[in-house]
Length: 266
Image (cartoon, rainbow, N blue to C red; front, side, top):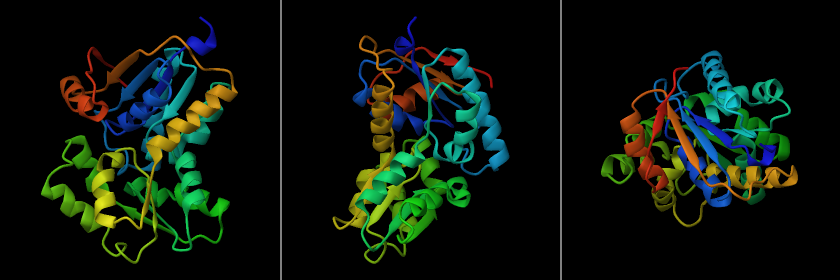
């Protein structure tokens, strides 16, 4: 099989990466995808860099064994700790993360008020977004806020009730009205809450969705490398635990039916 006809591998700690997969499918409807959700060990955002890196290598190895033409780390925490290592290990297979595309887009839209990065504890403490943004614009004020409970809400698909609204307001305290006017969603779970976040912040704020920016980046890169497929469109799913729950909640992420989820042991 020619390289361009091989699938694209996508992995995340659980459901959040499905926001990236959804955007990838919309941007690249003729591509085949294999998605791996490490649902047995989520969330990655509260774990040590060493543990996250070990998990990322294990997930990537499974996908690489399935002969993918590109690998997308659809987890900000894993990308912040492991992108460079995975890119080196699996060269020449291209490996893409979610951090740089989002950071670049935020820098393009920032004003003098700065950028607020909303992410997991691991991503915030790792500082990958902060370093990358400052490398591109050393003068821009960069703020970061860890929102760990948003991940739990997303995994439970609780985004429409008063609890979610209250938690969004809670984590945005101190930034509403007088904070940075560019807000970067630095976790792939957070696009689920984008409508509420926009409503809480108000029209004066620009919200950058890293799922969308990642999909655009991957599509552009594959086109440049001559790796686009013109006759695909199939998606395969794997999870490390709770296959029924993965299908049920995952369908709400993707707005489409999920069937035949395979269990994999990492």
